[in-house]
Image 1 (tube, helix red, strand yellow):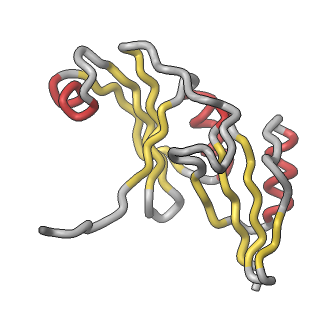
Image 2: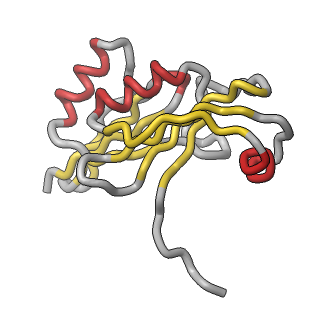
Length: 146
């Protein structure tokens, strides 16, 4: 069996693609591309006949693991739990290493995005916070301090 060659991206399905895209661009990701996808390929891969989605692919400056945001136009999306906490099963957060965590948290708060808990410090090496972004997406922000 051959192994994984590369970690390419994480996908998140959203309702408001423009708002979610703006949030992650505001954090510093760059839009790599935006397109509509439908047809046999999408129907086969996601297992939903006659589906149509709009996808935005974002990546950090200089490349790296991407973030795929998708909004289903067909069929209607199934609502998730926008208030899910870290102990709920499933994908719970997307983490980015940042500089000046307090300033980023303050900027996000000014845009209406609040902390899930508080800013914690781990063994004088990391400072970290969970921010609840658009549609309840938990974004973990980590700053190396040691």
